[in-house]
Image (cartoon, rainbow over all chains, first blue to last red; front, side, top):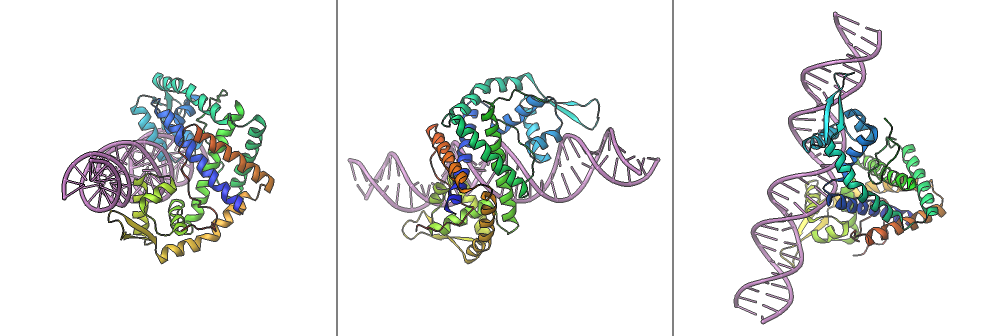
Length: 160
Length: 160
DNA sequence: AAGAAATATTGTGGGACCATATGAAATGGC
DNA sequence: GCCATTTCATATGGTCCCACAATATTTCTT
């Protein structure tokens, strides 16, 4: 029972520290974690509708509208009309948006490598297995199974 | 490299799902994760000053003031003047605050047990080791080493 | 064509965080 | 005793997220 207690504490600590440290490093590069999450998702999937973004990020529609507003204000993203559905808008990266991703990429890579470098590949595999098991458990327990985009390391398999 | 990518995704997913699911269950009992965190800390440590709470929870002073404001509004907590330091206030639980902790306890226990139940004790130990290793790494990388209070399972060693 | 559903957005209200700054009180050196 | 510094709680303003409700437009269903 005390092990579970410890586990919960360590899990929370880990997330908190990781989130803050990563955020700090990205802010030093002029980005923010949340913004980056959005930009990387669009880079990976190409033009997206608001709905798709909400689902991919596991966020409420309201949140996405706000985020896109902000990114558009910063010139990182544009909303184009969707030719095949006049209700919809297609959100895409601007050149400036792509530049932010490019500039930040090495720092993301460095973070991930430095972070997971303490684990040998066997432990990484074990860790991954456990995380997947726990994730499945949460879904069994009632959590939604929607995904979340990856912000930390580069993804080389875009799916249009 | 792709394993690290997967790891990051799974870690984020896990935290998000756990946080939301736990929060939902607690809200059904009239509490919230953050509130609970505060109440449990005070229960464990007795009367506390705002500063102590901020340090214990790894939060900014501003956050604590807000949280205590809310808890005080809900009648779960009171601010008493500190006789030995007229700047300070001593924050303590009300009877209602203690009642919330009592009511929520079984649900916290149930969640933790159900969640970690998918892992045998060997995997739990392995998981704990890995988490600690990663936490230490983050501290090496510049993250603060302040702790965070445990919200999920009961703690039986209060330290006044 | 009428109704239902989907799409994006807006408003309102709220929760949980942050850095920074302010005023009051305590503390420590002199 | 006196002044600079530190400490304490709080305030200002900001980010990121949510739920709920309402709107206008368009598409899909029947």
